[in-house]
Image (tube, rainbow, N blue to C red):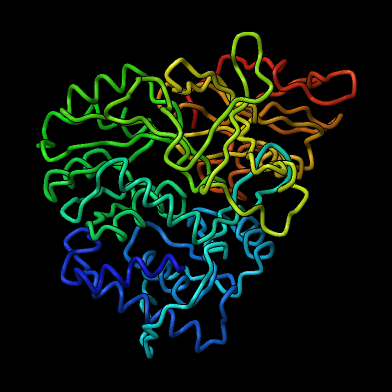
Amino acid sequence: MNLAANLTATAARDGARTALVLGDSELSYTELDAASASVAGTLRARGLRPGDRVGVMLPNVPQFAMAYYGVLRMGGIVVPMNPLLKAREVDHYVSDSGAALVLDDPVALPPDCEPDFGVAERDADDTAVILYTSGTTGRPKGAELTHGNLARNVEVMRRLISVEAEDVILGALPLFHSFGQTCGLNTAVATGACLALIPRFLPADVLELVERRRVTVFEGVPTMYAALLHAVERHDVSSLRVCVSGGAALPLEVLHGFETAFGCVVLEGYGLSETSPVASFNRAELRKPGSIGTPVAGVEMRLLDTTPEGVGEIAIRGHNVMKGYWRNPDATREAIDGDGWFRSGDLARVDEDGCYFIVDRKKELIIRGGYNVYPREIEEVIYEHPAVREAAVVGIPHPELGEEVGACVALTAGADADEADVREFVRSQVAAYKYPRHVWFVDELPKGPTGKILKRAIEVPEQAPAR
């Protein structure tokens, strides 16, 4: 089993069909197959072998798919990387994964070399992709998703939203993220559908693309739906038949407003990088607004440590659960028990129909506009500022982004620093979506009996508009 076989099978069956669209340019499945074979041939010529890791650090352009399937078909492991990452972040991804090289130049792809049209034999349990994610402690960990994980999750997604070869899926979700990979790229390729790419989410551009390309499937995070809702009047979106929302809870007023304005159903799902990502989903026949639905086929969910109010931590078991964290057995044992149950860190309740409703996050993860921001990672950067003694990064409610990043800071005695100093110090070292827009200073951060900073006790002052 090799996930890349989905591409070769589709190319053999429907090679003339359009695989990818970007602006006015189109790439057929035959052309995508050949381009990925050129990447595979180049990697083999450079001495890479099955199991070697290769970083792919590209935006939503056709070259991402060329690189992704090229690495897979030669038996390599893809390490997707956000193009917005700064040097220190890239260094961690590369050093931790042991990536032999990073493909980050769209102009150089596909390479002009002898293509290798073969597809390396891989087992279902062989790692296909390492997705870096993190909880509230330590640096990002690499979730190992196998060929079996991803292939089964793609098949589940195809059936849930009834994707056919005639569909046009709008690719606004980042392809370096599991949501965009599984539900967008891999689902389109396995089906022979067209993926219409857009490198940067701008509502007017998205709606123009929906109208011009007659997009039938839209997948996005709640902030995208809110933005589109305010710009729909001037566009024909009648081609849309289904929309998928994930990444965070979709406000009910946005869901109802979107369905009314666009005349199409929105189905919410739930998952994590560690679950490939889809774990639960709403169905047309059983849909409850505000719910993340019921477990998908072949997946079990249950609540752990349930309170008297019926709230517990979601645990997941099934074909979608990752193999483990790359070279981190301790973290793997902490996340997955001996019976295969993965602890999500998310708190929920379940109703009489088996529909789950997210209540809160056990983890302190901040989701800003659909992007994950891990407080500990940002805190480590802040602590490098010479004037900082203590710091805690917390999420601040934001009407459009869902959450904004805030930093509560205590300075070293006698040190002099202001909000702009700290903000710009962090901004220079992390991706643009991660740095704290709000910084405020206190004499002492609140602490518990053991000296641990109590984030829940941090008071967030009234803030000026974020910069």
